[in-house]
Image: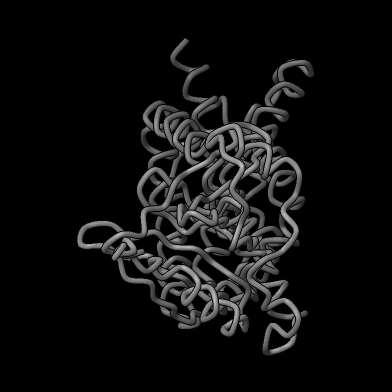
Amino acid sequence: MEDVLQTLGVALGLAALAGLNLYLTVFAAGLAIHFSWVALPASLQSLHVLGDPWVIVVAGILYFLEFWADKVPWIDSANDSVHTIIRPIGGALLAVLALGDAHPTVKVVAALLAGGVTLSAHAAKAGARLVANTSPEPISNIGLSLGEDAVVLGGLTLVAWYPIVALIVTVAAIVVIWVVLPKLMRSVRATSWLAWRKLNEPAEGGDDDNIFRKIPGPCELLLRRAHATTEGFTVAVPCISGGGPRLPRNVFGWLIRFEGGRLFFVGPRRFGPIVVEIGLEGRDILRESRFLSERLLISGPSTTNVFLFERGHRVLCDRLADALKPLPAVEPELIP
């Protein structure tokens, strides 16, 4: 039983590390085997092929190229896109190789599991990189890349000397990834959309600076159900939520204000649509420009709601900030 767990730890451990950096995983493992830094047990003798000089040279060249591409903003995301297929295939092959002479059925099941593990690790890596690219400075990309390389080398050490521990760590890491993956994918979607709009839109918003637009039927229906009133709307603009009290990040929706002054964010998500009222009393309304977006901040003493708009729509955000200022109090008319 222990031998089975150790083999499984090596197979899935290599697959997970391949999701971070396939070429470094093969290159470092090949060097360790070629120079006898590790002694492979009888059940893992099939991994000796990684120590072949040709395998080491090819993996080393590919790692060298990826090492530099991985440090440049947006080039790293393009590289991750290319490797969305390559890494899971490579991780599955490494897992099958680790199983040696196992039954074909076991190999097929292991390949499917290992491919899923590699794809999960790759998705987490690629998503984190894409989010990091919202900052124009390259330091975060370099730090993430070096950190990933360190994780790969540390993970290989764990796989080589403590494969059962590596199995436990791999399973725990995959569970964590799948817990945070929905939020990460929302962030990836929002970042990708903002980047695409920045590349394909003019510098200023033009006709899109109108702060009252036709509200989609599902959004109005959600809002009317949550707040039953016949009031009309004075503000209706599409945006992306940037966080705040009871307001999840990176949800595509609409910022809508009733004639009476109440402001809502409506997000018609497929699973769990949201309707959140945004308080305006005693809060400042600010606009700031970021690398990929214009941000509208509704800030109070202890909380801040953030809403993201396409980069270059500065005029829209300025008009919106003016429109969201508290309505003047109506003084009662004195009857003589």
